[in-house]
Length: 60
Image (cartoon, rainbow, N blue to C red):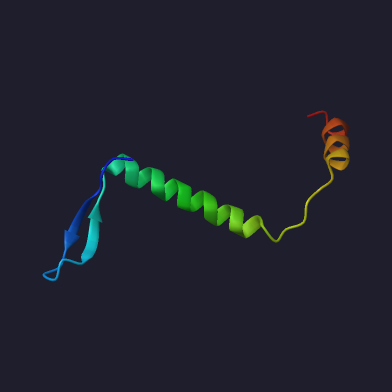
């Protein structure tokens, strides 16, 4: 990640950030990935043997 540029208020507090668009897009993709993981976190898992059985029975 490159050095971001900050916009500050009159007191010198950082209020905004400027990033290159590719870095911004990468951050947005990471955020979407994390949201998807959080959604699936509470779902149960499927045992590997069952998955394997279903895959082979469907000729996948």
